[in-house]
Image (spheres, rainbow, N blue to C red):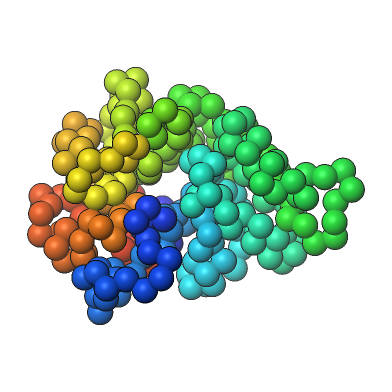
Amino acid sequence: MKIQFLGTGTSQGVPVIACQCKVCQSADTRDKRLRSSVLIELDKYNIVIDTGPDFRCQMLRAHVTHLDAVLMTHSHKDHIAGLDDVRAFNYIQQASVPIYATASTHEALKREFYYAFSNAKYPGAPLLELKKIEPGIPFDLFGSEIMPIEVMHYKMSVMGFRIGDFAYITDAKTVSPESRRLLDGVKVMVVNALQMIPHISHFTLEEALAFIDDINPREAYLTHISHRFGTHEDIQSLLPNNVFVSFDQLSIEIG
């Protein structure tokens, strides 16, 4: 299994106009972060977790020529806004793309992309096949077991996903003991770490590191990083040896 980070940033704290902060003015390409998403290459299949506003750019940048499924963590715009661009894969593949998400996220998609679900569908509208998932109940995807893991984004339920020895958690603030048990034995984990200072709905660095220490993976990668956090180099200097700052287009192999 190969994991490519399509984006490692967040809309939180991203300036609308030019910013003069150290991160935004950095010459280090690792500090140029699109909205958080990953591409999972599972045998011959391509699976994407979340389709944020940068989805089209991310697919072009990663030279993705086919898309077999999308896993959605939750319905916030920075995680779903690019879903319309799935239509390019519909056209190439002449098939719908399955969208695995909870019932509440499906309802949000039906509101946001109503034209894709209309009975009188406009020609060229994206073809989306909604597949319902529930936290703690595994499902099969292309012969692999996917475990949805609930974390709380303040008061909002968000799905993390475990595939074998890999787990992807984003937009977490609290994680129940039951959800933590579903991560037992995971070897590689991706987890959000927004910034240093407290936030109502996201892990800070301190909280993310405590969570990582509790789960105890072989290695962990931080994502969903605000420009308020600091540069890649600055953050990495604060981390233990088995924790890394992810960056756009970083690829890792698992298994």
